[in-house]
Image (tube, rainbow, N blue to C red; front, top):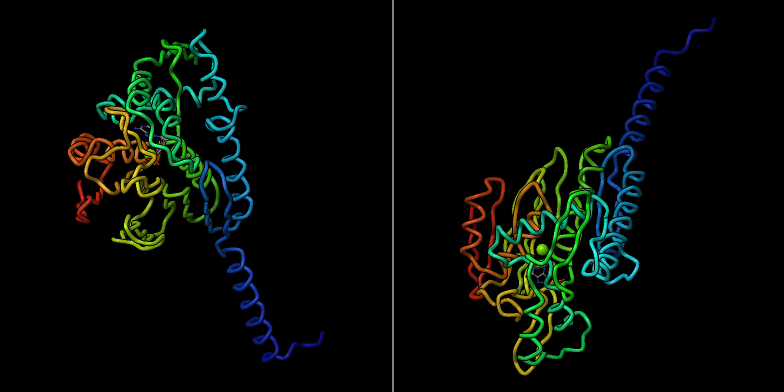
Length: 322
Ligand code: AMP
Ligand code: MG
């Protein structure tokens, strides 16, 4: 048998090694996906061999959850509950039941600052519509009476009722957090090495990699940060009135409503960032602290060792609360 020239063998081995390395690298390139759901822009970046398949699964999961939690869609499960639960208890999915049950707990933990029965006031202010109308004091008072998480009745066997005909639920302050946690589970159960999940301010850094996350300057342009933090296997949720609102007669009105007085919350804060392993809890607590103020951040971080806050007040002072 003819012997292969050793020089050619070495060259062949080198070529094969380079090709193999390039192939592996190509399969490891992070894959990205951007789409609109949950009323926000969703940016997902996933690295690993099956990244594209995992991204597709994440996208399907988001659309599935949207059908459960989207109050703006008459076909969603939450809309069905809102329409019928005052007449008689409605059997809902275990997922919706679980999210509503935990949301009631978040209300108790936050002295009612976070309250998913806020919907009548959210609809009254209608900040998202762009109509920019400030409701009358009497309309605000009338709708404030309709808001109380105590009117949600949780029965066994996944049944939910409302004790008042006026009760309506809006999951806008917590559903993105729940969805982020679900995507995090998908990534952890896959062969992917890491992922950066960004659901419009609800971020989860997944996997064995440290990320630098910029925290939006509430007074700056989009993408202008007042702080950059390093995190690993952690969710970072930022919220504040600066995200959505309108100006009328020199005053600014935004989308986070205080269940205490029915007006856009004004606790002296500009934005609230929450770090923790449950994106859902971070989401709920960021809304709650924005409504209630700095003292609640201290109380919640003392009770939950896993949670910490970075708050920015109206004078531009940032503070970390652990
Ligand atoms: P977030 O962006 O997470 O702070 O949530 C804000 C959204 O949650 C609003 O657009 C409303 O749909 C809803 N919301 C407003 N105020 C409250 C509140 N005090 N408690 C619970 N949900 C609220
Ligand atoms: Mg929230």
